[in-house]
Amino acid sequence: MKKKIRLNAAEIQSGFSRLNAAEGLIRQLPTDHDGRNTWLLNFGKSKEAKKLRKRRDLYFIKETQSCELATINIQTTQYE
Image (cartoon, rainbow, N blue to C red; front, side, top):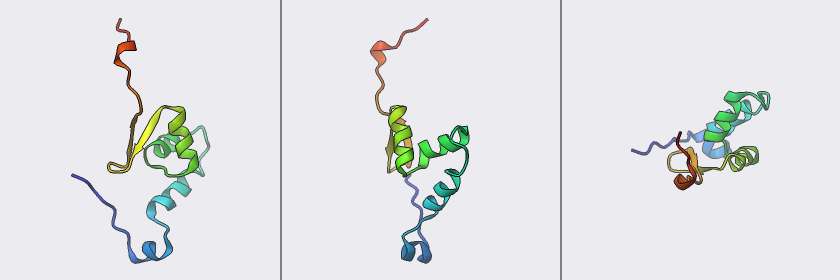
């Protein structure tokens, strides 16, 4: 089941959504803050969020509004 955020009239008119507003607030936290970086990885749309994902080999899925690993190489996984 896909969930979609419905924009209100002000968001449609301004082109500024709740996601943009939330990301602006989150980005004010210190750069080493775990919660900040986790939120940006999972929901961020900014260049900074994209850089974080690239560094961690993640990609953003628009449909689910979340991240997944870009590559999973089972053959190189070692079990103890």
